[in-house]
Image 1 (cartoon, helix red, strand yellow):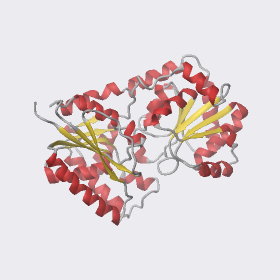
Image 2 (cartoon, one colour):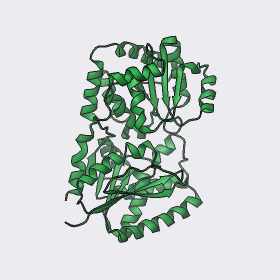
Image 3 (tube, rainbow, N blue to C red):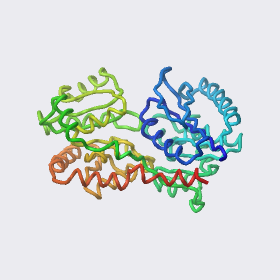
Image 4 (cartoon, rainbow, N blue to C red):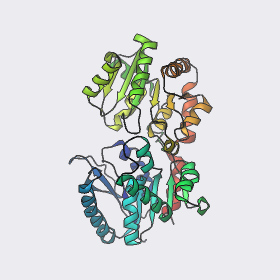
Length: 397
Protein backbone atom coordinates (compact mmCIF):
# COMPACT_ATOMS: atom_id res chain seq x y z
CA UNK A 1 0.00 0.00 0.00
CA UNK A 2 1.30 3.46 -0.90
CA UNK A 3 2.72 5.50 1.98
CA UNK A 4 0.73 8.60 2.98
CA UNK A 5 2.84 10.63 5.41
CA UNK A 6 1.36 13.85 6.79
CA UNK A 7 3.03 16.96 8.22
CA UNK A 8 0.84 18.57 10.93
CA UNK A 9 1.74 22.16 11.77
CA UNK A 10 0.74 23.85 15.03
CA UNK A 11 1.73 27.10 16.73
CA UNK A 12 1.55 25.81 20.32
CA UNK A 13 3.63 24.25 23.06
CA UNK A 14 3.31 20.47 23.34
CA UNK A 15 2.18 20.83 26.97
CA UNK A 16 -0.57 23.27 26.04
CA UNK A 17 -4.18 22.11 26.28
CA UNK A 18 -4.55 23.26 22.67
CA UNK A 19 -2.28 20.37 21.69
CA UNK A 20 -3.60 17.82 24.17
CA UNK A 21 -7.32 18.43 23.58
CA UNK A 22 -7.65 20.57 20.44
CA UNK A 23 -5.15 18.81 18.17
CA UNK A 24 -3.97 15.39 19.34
CA UNK A 25 -7.39 13.67 19.44
CA UNK A 26 -7.94 14.56 15.78
CA UNK A 27 -4.41 13.55 14.79
CA UNK A 28 -5.19 10.13 16.27
CA UNK A 29 -8.34 10.00 14.13
CA UNK A 30 -6.27 10.91 11.06
CA UNK A 31 -3.91 8.05 11.94
CA UNK A 32 -6.79 5.60 11.57
CA UNK A 33 -7.23 6.49 7.89
CA UNK A 34 -3.66 6.36 6.63
CA UNK A 35 -1.81 3.13 5.72
CA UNK A 36 0.06 1.26 8.45
CA UNK A 37 3.38 2.13 6.84
CA UNK A 38 2.66 5.87 7.14
CA UNK A 39 3.57 8.48 9.76
CA UNK A 40 2.20 11.82 10.98
CA UNK A 41 4.88 14.36 11.89
CA UNK A 42 3.54 16.97 14.35
CA UNK A 43 5.31 20.32 14.73
CA UNK A 44 5.08 22.13 18.09
CA UNK A 45 6.65 25.44 19.13
CA UNK A 46 7.74 24.95 22.72
CA UNK A 47 8.41 27.67 25.26
CA UNK A 48 10.42 25.25 27.42
CA UNK A 49 13.18 22.83 26.49
CA UNK A 50 11.57 19.91 28.29
CA UNK A 51 8.30 18.56 26.98
CA UNK A 52 5.91 15.69 27.41
CA UNK A 53 5.11 13.56 24.37
CA UNK A 54 2.56 10.82 23.99
CA UNK A 55 3.71 7.62 22.34
CA UNK A 56 1.80 6.52 19.26
CA UNK A 57 3.10 4.19 16.54
CA UNK A 58 2.12 6.57 13.73
CA UNK A 59 2.85 9.95 15.41
CA UNK A 60 6.28 11.59 15.53
CA UNK A 61 7.02 14.92 17.22
CA UNK A 62 9.05 17.77 15.72
CA UNK A 63 9.89 20.49 18.24
CA UNK A 64 11.11 24.02 17.64
CA UNK A 65 11.34 26.93 20.05
CA UNK A 66 8.53 29.49 20.19
CA UNK A 67 9.66 33.07 19.54
CA UNK A 68 7.19 36.02 19.63
CA UNK A 69 6.71 37.95 16.38
CA UNK A 70 9.62 40.26 15.56
CA UNK A 71 12.82 40.41 13.50
CA UNK A 72 14.44 37.59 15.47
CA UNK A 73 11.36 35.44 14.93
CA UNK A 74 11.39 36.12 11.18
CA UNK A 75 14.94 34.79 10.76
CA UNK A 76 14.32 31.88 13.15
CA UNK A 77 11.14 30.77 11.38
CA UNK A 78 12.82 31.09 7.98
CA UNK A 79 15.33 28.51 9.22
CA UNK A 80 12.43 26.37 10.47
CA UNK A 81 10.72 26.58 7.07
CA UNK A 82 13.94 25.44 5.39
CA UNK A 83 14.10 22.47 7.77
CA UNK A 84 10.46 21.57 7.09
CA UNK A 85 10.97 21.99 3.33
CA UNK A 86 13.76 19.41 3.43
CA UNK A 87 11.71 17.17 5.74
CA UNK A 88 8.82 17.13 3.26
CA UNK A 89 11.09 15.60 0.60
CA UNK A 90 13.13 13.43 2.96
CA UNK A 91 10.03 11.86 4.58
CA UNK A 92 7.93 11.92 1.41
CA UNK A 93 5.17 14.00 2.96
CA UNK A 94 1.87 13.59 1.11
CA UNK A 95 -0.23 16.33 2.82
CA UNK A 96 0.41 19.45 4.89
CA UNK A 97 -2.22 19.82 7.61
CA UNK A 98 -2.11 23.10 9.58
CA UNK A 99 -4.02 23.91 12.78
CA UNK A 100 -5.43 27.47 12.75
CA UNK A 101 -4.21 30.27 10.51
CA UNK A 102 -0.91 31.22 12.27
CA UNK A 103 0.38 27.70 11.57
CA UNK A 104 -1.50 27.87 8.27
CA UNK A 105 0.85 30.69 7.23
CA UNK A 106 3.77 28.25 7.42
CA UNK A 107 1.67 25.63 5.67
CA UNK A 108 0.75 27.97 2.82
CA UNK A 109 4.40 28.82 2.10
CA UNK A 110 5.47 25.17 2.26
CA UNK A 111 2.58 24.11 0.04
CA UNK A 112 3.57 26.70 -2.58
CA UNK A 113 7.22 25.60 -2.48
CA UNK A 114 6.57 21.84 -2.59
CA UNK A 115 3.24 21.48 -4.37
CA UNK A 116 1.87 19.39 -1.50
CA UNK A 117 -1.88 19.86 -0.85
CA UNK A 118 -2.76 22.03 2.15
CA UNK A 119 -5.51 21.44 4.73
CA UNK A 120 -6.38 24.24 7.18
CA UNK A 121 -7.95 22.81 10.34
CA UNK A 122 -9.85 24.78 13.00
CA UNK A 123 -10.21 27.58 10.46
CA UNK A 124 -11.29 30.87 12.05
CA UNK A 125 -10.07 34.50 11.85
CA UNK A 126 -6.97 35.26 13.88
CA UNK A 127 -5.39 38.46 12.57
CA UNK A 128 -8.51 40.61 12.96
CA UNK A 129 -9.24 39.00 16.32
CA UNK A 130 -5.83 40.07 17.63
CA UNK A 131 -6.64 43.67 16.70
CA UNK A 132 -10.13 43.56 18.25
CA UNK A 133 -8.85 42.36 21.63
CA UNK A 134 -6.01 44.89 21.69
CA UNK A 135 -3.06 42.53 21.20
CA UNK A 136 -2.06 44.02 17.81
CA UNK A 137 -2.58 47.38 16.14
CA UNK A 138 -4.35 47.52 12.80
CA UNK A 139 -1.41 49.26 11.16
CA UNK A 140 1.12 46.71 12.48
CA UNK A 141 3.23 44.46 10.26
CA UNK A 142 2.00 41.38 12.15
CA UNK A 143 -1.65 42.15 11.33
CA UNK A 144 -1.11 43.02 7.66
CA UNK A 145 1.11 40.00 7.05
CA UNK A 146 -1.18 37.43 8.68
CA UNK A 147 -4.37 38.96 7.24
CA UNK A 148 -2.84 38.78 3.74
CA UNK A 149 -1.68 35.21 4.34
CA UNK A 150 -5.13 34.23 5.68
CA UNK A 151 -6.68 35.36 2.41
CA UNK A 152 -4.08 33.50 0.37
CA UNK A 153 -4.39 30.25 2.33
CA UNK A 154 -8.21 30.41 2.23
CA UNK A 155 -8.16 30.30 -1.56
CA UNK A 156 -5.17 27.96 -1.85
CA UNK A 157 -6.16 25.21 0.59
CA UNK A 158 -7.42 21.91 -0.78
CA UNK A 159 -9.74 21.73 2.25
CA UNK A 160 -10.88 24.08 5.00
CA UNK A 161 -12.14 22.62 8.28
CA UNK A 162 -13.95 25.54 9.92
CA UNK A 163 -14.93 25.91 13.57
CA UNK A 164 -18.35 27.27 12.56
CA UNK A 165 -20.31 27.39 9.31
CA UNK A 166 -20.37 31.20 9.36
CA UNK A 167 -16.57 31.32 9.49
CA UNK A 168 -16.81 30.32 5.84
CA UNK A 169 -20.19 31.56 4.64
CA UNK A 170 -19.91 34.99 6.31
CA UNK A 171 -16.34 35.83 7.30
CA UNK A 172 -14.38 34.20 4.47
CA UNK A 173 -16.91 35.50 1.96
CA UNK A 174 -16.89 39.11 3.20
CA UNK A 175 -13.16 39.40 4.01
CA UNK A 176 -11.53 37.14 1.42
CA UNK A 177 -14.18 36.89 -1.34
CA UNK A 178 -14.27 33.12 -0.88
CA UNK A 179 -16.83 31.14 -2.86
CA UNK A 180 -18.44 28.60 -0.49
CA UNK A 181 -20.03 26.73 -3.40
CA UNK A 182 -16.60 25.23 -4.02
CA UNK A 183 -17.69 22.66 -1.40
CA UNK A 184 -14.12 22.03 -0.24
CA UNK A 185 -14.90 22.83 3.37
CA UNK A 186 -16.28 21.15 6.48
CA UNK A 187 -17.51 22.34 9.88
CA UNK A 188 -15.92 20.98 13.06
CA UNK A 189 -16.46 22.69 16.43
CA UNK A 190 -14.11 21.94 19.33
CA UNK A 191 -15.22 18.44 20.30
CA UNK A 192 -14.77 16.30 23.40
CA UNK A 193 -14.11 12.63 24.03
CA UNK A 194 -17.33 11.80 25.87
CA UNK A 195 -15.88 8.52 27.10
CA UNK A 196 -13.33 10.52 29.09
CA UNK A 197 -15.37 13.60 30.02
CA UNK A 198 -18.32 12.26 31.97
CA UNK A 199 -19.60 12.83 35.52
CA UNK A 200 -18.39 10.52 38.27
CA UNK A 201 -20.37 10.72 41.52
CA UNK A 202 -17.69 9.05 43.66
CA UNK A 203 -14.96 11.28 42.28
CA UNK A 204 -17.19 14.31 42.87
CA UNK A 205 -17.61 13.37 46.54
CA UNK A 206 -13.88 12.74 46.93
CA UNK A 207 -12.87 16.03 45.30
CA UNK A 208 -15.38 18.16 47.15
CA UNK A 209 -14.38 16.57 50.45
CA UNK A 210 -10.68 17.04 49.73
CA UNK A 211 -11.22 20.69 48.79
CA UNK A 212 -13.54 21.23 51.77
CA UNK A 213 -16.43 22.41 49.58
CA UNK A 214 -19.01 19.67 50.24
CA UNK A 215 -21.95 21.96 50.92
CA UNK A 216 -21.06 24.85 48.63
CA UNK A 217 -22.15 26.10 45.23
CA UNK A 218 -19.01 25.75 43.17
CA UNK A 219 -18.10 27.53 39.96
CA UNK A 220 -15.13 26.76 37.73
CA UNK A 221 -13.10 28.47 35.04
CA UNK A 222 -10.36 26.73 33.07
CA UNK A 223 -8.26 29.30 31.26
CA UNK A 224 -6.48 32.62 31.20
CA UNK A 225 -7.26 36.33 31.54
CA UNK A 226 -6.44 39.06 29.06
CA UNK A 227 -6.10 38.79 25.30
CA UNK A 228 -9.31 37.25 24.00
CA UNK A 229 -10.56 36.70 27.57
CA UNK A 230 -12.15 39.14 30.00
CA UNK A 231 -10.11 40.27 32.97
CA UNK A 232 -11.55 43.06 35.13
CA UNK A 233 -15.13 42.16 34.18
CA UNK A 234 -14.52 38.57 35.26
CA UNK A 235 -13.37 39.62 38.72
CA UNK A 236 -16.31 42.03 39.01
CA UNK A 237 -18.60 39.10 38.26
CA UNK A 238 -16.73 37.01 40.85
CA UNK A 239 -17.24 39.70 43.46
CA UNK A 240 -20.96 39.78 42.69
CA UNK A 241 -21.20 36.00 43.05
CA UNK A 242 -19.41 36.14 46.37
CA UNK A 243 -21.77 38.83 47.65
CA UNK A 244 -24.81 36.79 46.57
CA UNK A 245 -23.87 33.31 47.80
CA UNK A 246 -21.63 34.45 50.69
CA UNK A 247 -20.20 31.51 52.67
CA UNK A 248 -22.07 29.01 50.45
CA UNK A 249 -19.84 29.92 47.49
CA UNK A 250 -16.50 28.58 46.23
CA UNK A 251 -14.76 29.08 42.91
CA UNK A 252 -12.18 26.82 41.26
CA UNK A 253 -9.75 28.64 38.99
CA UNK A 254 -7.46 26.41 36.91
CA UNK A 255 -5.03 28.87 35.39
CA UNK A 256 -1.33 29.45 34.78
CA UNK A 257 -1.53 32.94 36.29
CA UNK A 258 0.63 33.42 39.38
CA UNK A 259 -0.56 33.69 42.97
CA UNK A 260 0.72 37.27 42.96
CA UNK A 261 -1.55 38.10 40.02
CA UNK A 262 -4.52 36.49 41.72
CA UNK A 263 -3.84 38.34 44.97
CA UNK A 264 -3.58 41.67 43.15
CA UNK A 265 -6.85 41.17 41.24
CA UNK A 266 -8.73 39.94 44.32
CA UNK A 267 -7.50 42.90 46.36
CA UNK A 268 -8.53 45.26 43.57
CA UNK A 269 -12.15 44.05 43.79
CA UNK A 270 -12.17 43.25 47.50
CA UNK A 271 -12.64 39.51 46.92
CA UNK A 272 -11.96 37.17 49.82
CA UNK A 273 -9.32 34.74 48.52
CA UNK A 274 -10.56 32.08 50.96
CA UNK A 275 -13.38 31.50 48.48
CA UNK A 276 -10.94 30.88 45.61
CA UNK A 277 -9.22 27.56 44.86
CA UNK A 278 -6.39 28.41 42.48
CA UNK A 279 -4.52 25.56 40.79
CA UNK A 280 -2.46 24.96 37.65
CA UNK A 281 -2.71 21.29 36.73
CA UNK A 282 -2.00 19.08 33.70
CA UNK A 283 -5.01 18.92 31.44
CA UNK A 284 -5.62 15.25 32.25
CA UNK A 285 -6.41 16.36 35.84
CA UNK A 286 -8.93 19.04 34.81
CA UNK A 287 -11.73 16.47 34.75
CA UNK A 288 -11.26 15.90 38.51
CA UNK A 289 -12.05 19.53 39.23
CA UNK A 290 -14.90 19.67 36.71
CA UNK A 291 -16.49 16.83 38.66
CA UNK A 292 -16.38 19.01 41.78
CA UNK A 293 -18.12 21.98 40.13
CA UNK A 294 -21.76 23.03 39.72
CA UNK A 295 -21.31 25.42 36.80
CA UNK A 296 -18.67 26.79 34.43
CA UNK A 297 -17.91 30.18 32.95
CA UNK A 298 -16.61 31.13 29.48
CA UNK A 299 -15.44 34.76 29.65
CA UNK A 300 -14.51 35.29 25.99
CA UNK A 301 -14.56 38.92 24.87
CA UNK A 302 -17.67 39.55 22.80
CA UNK A 303 -15.99 40.96 19.68
CA UNK A 304 -17.09 40.40 16.08
CA UNK A 305 -14.61 37.64 15.17
CA UNK A 306 -15.51 35.53 18.21
CA UNK A 307 -18.78 34.65 16.48
CA UNK A 308 -16.66 32.33 14.36
CA UNK A 309 -14.57 30.60 17.05
CA UNK A 310 -15.28 27.45 19.08
CA UNK A 311 -14.28 27.47 22.77
CA UNK A 312 -12.96 24.09 23.91
CA UNK A 313 -14.10 24.63 27.49
CA UNK A 314 -17.82 24.77 26.58
CA UNK A 315 -17.80 21.23 25.26
CA UNK A 316 -15.99 20.03 28.38
CA UNK A 317 -18.45 21.84 30.67
CA UNK A 318 -21.44 20.41 28.80
CA UNK A 319 -20.00 16.88 28.75
CA UNK A 320 -19.87 17.07 32.56
CA UNK A 321 -23.46 18.33 32.73
CA UNK A 322 -22.46 21.82 33.88
CA UNK A 323 -24.52 24.94 33.09
CA UNK A 324 -22.45 27.74 31.56
CA UNK A 325 -22.30 31.51 31.92
CA UNK A 326 -21.09 32.87 28.59
CA UNK A 327 -20.78 36.25 26.93
CA UNK A 328 -22.98 37.21 23.97
CA UNK A 329 -22.32 36.23 20.34
CA UNK A 330 -19.63 33.64 21.04
CA UNK A 331 -19.47 30.97 18.34
CA UNK A 332 -22.75 29.04 18.05
CA UNK A 333 -22.47 28.44 21.79
CA UNK A 334 -24.22 31.56 23.10
CA UNK A 335 -27.24 30.69 20.97
CA UNK A 336 -27.17 27.04 22.08
CA UNK A 337 -27.05 28.07 25.75
CA UNK A 338 -29.94 30.53 25.36
CA UNK A 339 -32.21 28.33 23.25
CA UNK A 340 -31.79 25.28 25.49
CA UNK A 341 -31.86 27.09 28.83
CA UNK A 342 -28.60 25.47 29.91
CA UNK A 343 -26.96 28.58 31.30
CA UNK A 344 -26.97 32.34 31.04
CA UNK A 345 -25.83 34.60 28.21
CA UNK A 346 -24.46 37.94 29.44
CA UNK A 347 -25.97 40.62 27.22
CA UNK A 348 -23.90 43.39 28.81
CA UNK A 349 -21.05 43.56 31.30
CA UNK A 350 -22.33 45.35 34.40
CA UNK A 351 -23.22 44.45 37.97
CA UNK A 352 -26.95 44.19 37.30
CA UNK A 353 -26.42 41.66 34.52
CA UNK A 354 -23.89 39.77 36.62
CA UNK A 355 -26.49 39.59 39.40
CA UNK A 356 -29.15 38.35 36.95
CA UNK A 357 -26.84 35.57 35.74
CA UNK A 358 -26.18 34.41 39.30
CA UNK A 359 -29.88 34.36 40.23
CA UNK A 360 -30.63 32.36 37.07
CA UNK A 361 -27.87 29.86 37.85
CA UNK A 362 -28.95 29.54 41.46
CA UNK A 363 -32.33 28.27 40.25
CA UNK A 364 -30.97 26.15 37.39
CA UNK A 365 -28.41 24.30 39.52
CA UNK A 366 -31.18 22.82 41.68
CA UNK A 367 -33.42 21.67 38.82
CA UNK A 368 -33.99 17.95 38.35
CA UNK A 369 -32.63 16.31 35.18
CA UNK A 370 -30.55 19.42 34.48
CA UNK A 371 -27.36 17.38 34.14
CA UNK A 372 -28.92 14.87 31.73
CA UNK A 373 -30.26 17.66 29.52
CA UNK A 374 -26.87 19.36 29.28
CA UNK A 375 -25.01 16.12 28.52
CA UNK A 376 -27.40 15.54 25.61
CA UNK A 377 -26.32 18.94 24.24
CA UNK A 378 -22.68 17.79 24.40
CA UNK A 379 -23.60 14.58 22.58
CA UNK A 380 -25.37 16.55 19.85
CA UNK A 381 -22.87 19.37 19.30
CA UNK A 382 -19.48 18.32 20.72
CA UNK A 383 -19.13 14.54 20.32
CA UNK A 384 -15.70 13.66 18.93
CA UNK A 385 -17.25 10.75 17.06
CA UNK A 386 -19.38 13.16 15.03
CA UNK A 387 -16.37 14.51 13.10
CA UNK A 388 -14.44 11.35 12.21
CA UNK A 389 -15.96 11.31 8.73
CA UNK A 390 -14.24 14.63 7.94
CA UNK A 391 -10.81 13.06 8.25
CA UNK A 392 -11.99 9.87 6.58
CA UNK A 393 -13.15 11.91 3.56
CA UNK A 394 -9.82 13.69 3.29
CA UNK A 395 -7.36 10.87 3.97
CA UNK A 396 -9.12 7.75 2.73
CA UNK A 397 -9.00 8.98 -0.85
